[in-house]
Length: 301
Image 1 (tube, one colour):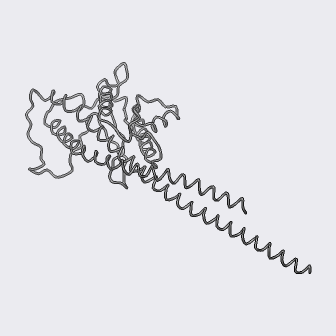
Image 2 (cartoon, helix red, strand yellow):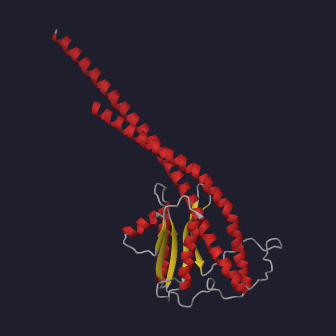
Image 3 (cartoon, helix red, strand yellow):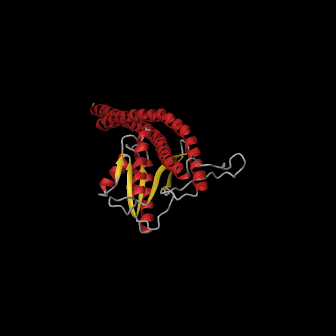
């Protein structure tokens, strides 16, 4: 009985130590997700505005631009997969990777080669464990991305798309983006978007004099305007996706650590109850032995 009681006490102390860790991680994630949500709120209006501008310019320019033209023969599709560097965030990374595998099947069924570009160590580990090749990867910033990283990724993807699959050094004919959109602290949704050739996402609101497209005049010409605007558009989409994914990761980690802390509290209560039961059983046994011994002495006299 004594050994069993000690075992329950040791387990309870171990769970208490784990609870302190999960509680600390929960508080850290809660404090950081506030800033991440602010960054999403600050950058989303610009992303919407440049999306609207790109839509209007591409609609009224009537110019065949390399980033807006769909190729007749498509051989390779590049996919940027945004995951996390660390775990302990529930099914956050698993959901993104699962959605990317579904996209892989769709791309391969259409007769194209799937070319992944990875962000986050979880995606790198996933591909390395399965001995799969990937074109490039970026990591070390998943919960706090910088604009320089977004520019670097954008430059690489635009270069690969401009080169095309007919080039000697690879290249792709399409660019897709798989990331997690932050809705609120409870809901985060995995999104798949085609970046190139340009798939402009227009506002679903009905057109009114207040939100309708203005008339554009291009100076010096429409081609040069598109050359300057479309790379900025792609960079802003990737930047916003990185921020959305960072906020989603922190929110998922906060929920996961909150659940772990609650489970630890339940385990502590369970082990405390079991230890008390073992202690009561030990005391009852000792009392029974004393009473039995006293009865035996009385009978002997």
